[in-house]
Image (cartoon, rainbow, N blue to C red; front, side, top):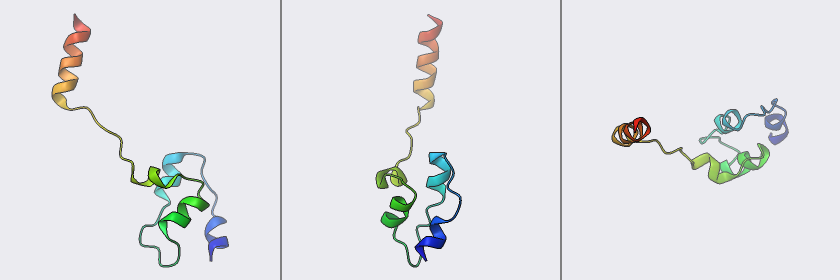
Length: 65
């Protein structure tokens, strides 16, 4: 089963490999899928921080000065 899963052509992009993780997979755990995709397991849970609208406005004003 794992060999068939691994035989999929693995993309070079981290985002594309992260998208291949199937949380509800009946056989492979998330941990095993990350191992097979050569991903750090923490990267599956990471969501990039975004700037608030207020912070962006303040940075824009600072740039103008």
